[in-house]
Amino acid sequence: MRTRRNRSVAQQCRCYEVENIFEYMVSVYINGNITPFRELYKELCTDAQKQFIEYVFEEVNPAYRLEIIRATI
Image 1 (cartoon, rainbow, N blue to C red):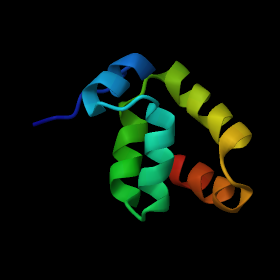
Image 2 (cartoon, rainbow, N blue to C red):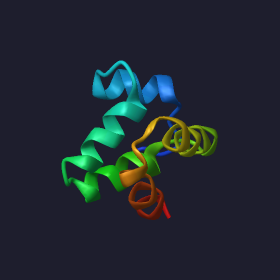
Image 3 (cartoon, rainbow, N blue to C red):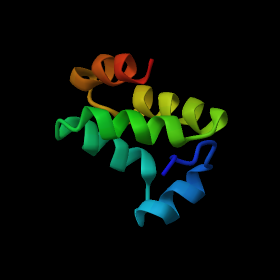
Image 4 (cartoon, rainbow, N blue to C red):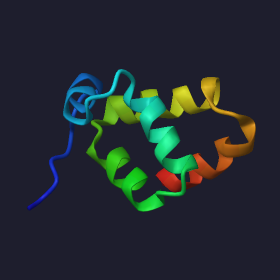
């Protein structure tokens, strides 16, 4: 089955039953699940993707920041 794209942050939170999808995505990446992380990122709409990048720069440990940004492109 094909994955749905262009989901908002609220839709992603409901779908994965989490409070903050951005925190969840970062934890998925840190735990070594790179492929699922990429799929989660691709499911977000363009505005949500931009918000995630902002979140990474503001909230994520600098040690992981560059790796996560590289994984999104």
